[in-house]
Image 1 (cartoon, rainbow over the protein chains, first blue to last red):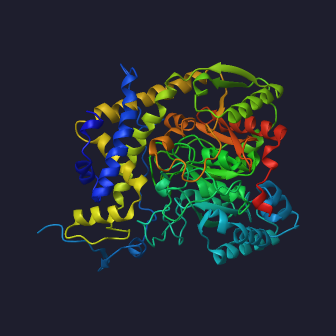
Image 2: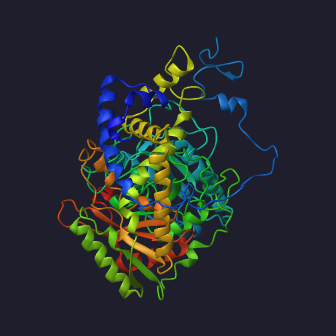
Length: 95
Length: 490
């Protein structure tokens, strides 16, 4: 796995990002160069090292299962691009 | 001039009835009028709303005050933090006319403390950048030299404080986005320990790295603000349930017995000689103040930038998936939802954001996850352990904040990798989750106009009291914070 195998078109699809052909070209070459730099990490010795997802691991953080204040429907819809009947309107999902 | 006061100076004057919240806010508004056409720190500000808050503060003051630590103090906000009924854009086109329906936890706290919360401060789009050149609404200029950048991503927050357009501001820091602009603009910038300040209402960039923090004119103000912002929040499950100390009380000026570490790995090739000289002079000053200087080693420093650009971009690719045109955003129509998402995001995100989303998606994708993301998380452990080990022998680590002073607009924007490498001193702090602060330690001599140089102090997890004590003692003995950019009073 390396910079050479980087398929910008495929990754853009995964990211749901539509790119123009120029953008694809520019991004592909910039990212290849960045990935080339990141190869540096292969030099680090990570034998027996646990991954860190969170600097100060907190475990089982919960709050009481109690209904508390939340956004009203009106507030939640305030920035909706399209809405109807108190719902967000989107293109058809299922045929 | 009232807008030039510090928080502690203003609160004293207000308590004595020597001035009003309204007059102070008006002085800030006048300053914005005077300089912001050139500095462009503010994307917008709601003067009427701010004046109403100031009037309410004056009413409370007239009634004898209420002991609120920030009553009447005008504080401006980076455009990445939610303020109810104000625009929330993260300096991006994609959010269109989005108006926040709620206040972030830190805004609730500022209001409870009596602050006048106003303005939307410019930033790199979605907090991705080191110069504020990635804003979709034009860059902010460094008040010390308008041909140069203020740093990023909280460039507007730093510039506004440096130019006396507000008494303090809030920013966010994921890889240095508070500390670096503070250094380049000559003010104080603090990144609290991860978990110290609630992220509820902060638009997430990298959830395991982000923290909100203050920009102030001096260290005492930073201590005051940190005390207001800190605290456990049930709505942020990564916030820590530790008591909030009286940070201002830690500013005793007594450094006896404290050990300051110098990391040999931070003497990099790209370190500007004037920055090096200023930091070395600060080290001598610390010795005079009674601190002991100890050499430490942070051996995995060379991997920090690479680690960050995998971890942060991976987290960003997940966090920014929500900007899809369904519940908010400038929607671009599509025949089906996926086409709608792709077109909305393609039209709305700027180039740096796209770059990072693509990189983050790639490093998490099938076949590459273990080689990149998992490996980066392991190197993150090594970086964190470097710090924890160093903190067994020292109380804080002293470094330059940036390798150079502010660079010219356009100088690095063509080469993303060059831009990333300029974060080398600030990035490890976020990976390790520890606290860090930048404060002024001098100026360049070789440039006209002269430019601020910042000193960084890195502290133990939840070691902000020691950090602030160390910073304050140096600041009071050196006095750099008293210098203002010529533009601020022109």
